[in-house]
Length: 78
Ligand SMILES: [Zn+2]
Image (spheres, rainbow, N blue to C red):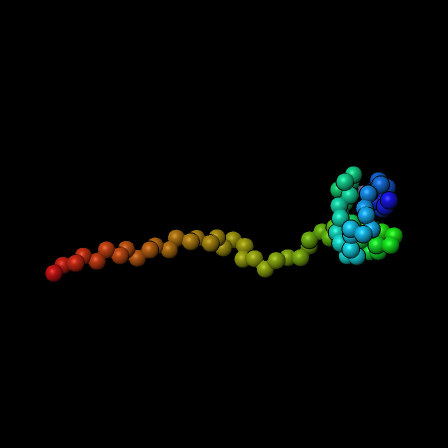
Protein backbone atom coordinates (compact mmCIF):
# COMPACT_ATOMS: atom_id res chain seq x y z
CA UNK A 1 0.00 0.00 0.00
CA UNK A 2 1.34 3.36 -0.98
CA UNK A 3 0.36 6.69 0.36
CA UNK A 4 -0.10 9.80 -1.60
CA UNK A 5 2.57 12.23 -0.48
CA UNK A 6 0.22 15.06 -1.13
CA UNK A 7 -2.93 14.15 0.70
CA UNK A 8 -1.90 10.99 2.48
CA UNK A 9 -4.59 8.96 0.86
CA UNK A 10 -3.85 5.35 0.41
CA UNK A 11 -3.16 4.42 -3.15
CA UNK A 12 -3.46 0.84 -4.05
CA UNK A 13 -0.58 0.35 -6.38
CA UNK A 14 0.84 -2.98 -7.14
CA UNK A 15 4.57 -2.69 -7.27
CA UNK A 16 4.59 -5.27 -9.98
CA UNK A 17 2.29 -3.19 -12.08
CA UNK A 18 4.12 0.07 -12.03
CA UNK A 19 7.44 1.05 -13.40
CA UNK A 20 9.93 3.59 -12.31
CA UNK A 21 9.17 6.84 -13.98
CA UNK A 22 5.55 5.99 -14.43
CA UNK A 23 3.09 8.73 -13.78
CA UNK A 24 0.07 7.90 -11.75
CA UNK A 25 -2.72 10.04 -10.53
CA UNK A 26 -3.96 10.22 -7.01
CA UNK A 27 -7.62 9.33 -6.96
CA UNK A 28 -8.18 11.52 -3.95
CA UNK A 29 -6.51 14.81 -4.69
CA UNK A 30 -5.92 14.31 -8.37
CA UNK A 31 -2.29 15.20 -8.12
CA UNK A 32 0.15 13.67 -10.50
CA UNK A 33 2.66 11.37 -8.94
CA UNK A 34 5.78 9.89 -10.34
CA UNK A 35 6.93 6.48 -9.36
CA UNK A 36 10.53 6.85 -8.34
CA UNK A 37 10.94 3.43 -6.89
CA UNK A 38 9.02 0.23 -7.13
CA UNK A 39 10.20 -1.94 -4.28
CA UNK A 40 8.52 -0.59 -2.35
CA UNK A 41 6.59 1.84 -4.44
CA UNK A 42 7.67 5.35 -3.75
CA UNK A 43 5.86 8.30 -5.15
CA UNK A 44 6.77 11.90 -5.50
CA UNK A 45 4.49 14.74 -6.34
CA UNK A 46 5.07 16.21 -9.70
CA UNK A 47 4.96 19.89 -9.16
CA UNK A 48 2.98 21.56 -11.79
CA UNK A 49 5.25 23.83 -13.62
CA UNK A 50 3.34 26.90 -14.41
CA UNK A 51 3.98 27.48 -17.98
CA UNK A 52 5.69 30.78 -18.16
CA UNK A 53 7.43 30.10 -21.34
CA UNK A 54 6.39 32.61 -23.85
CA UNK A 55 5.73 31.00 -27.06
CA UNK A 56 6.75 32.68 -30.20
CA UNK A 57 3.42 33.59 -31.47
CA UNK A 58 2.67 36.34 -33.83
CA UNK A 59 0.17 38.18 -31.80
CA UNK A 60 -2.28 40.35 -33.57
CA UNK A 61 -1.58 38.75 -36.86
CA UNK A 62 -4.75 37.03 -37.62
CA UNK A 63 -4.39 34.30 -40.06
CA UNK A 64 -6.82 35.46 -42.60
CA UNK A 65 -6.95 32.49 -44.74
CA UNK A 66 -9.09 33.69 -47.51
CA UNK A 67 -7.23 32.54 -50.45
CA UNK A 68 -9.52 32.71 -53.33
CA UNK A 69 -9.46 29.66 -55.37
CA UNK A 70 -8.76 30.53 -58.93
CA UNK A 71 -11.94 29.96 -60.71
CA UNK A 72 -11.36 27.35 -63.18
CA UNK A 73 -14.05 27.71 -65.67
CA UNK A 74 -12.32 28.19 -68.88
CA UNK A 75 -14.85 28.55 -71.50
CA UNK A 76 -14.19 26.29 -74.27
CA UNK A 77 -14.79 28.64 -77.04
CA UNK A 78 -14.02 27.01 -80.19
ZN1 LIG B 1 -3.52 12.59 -3.03
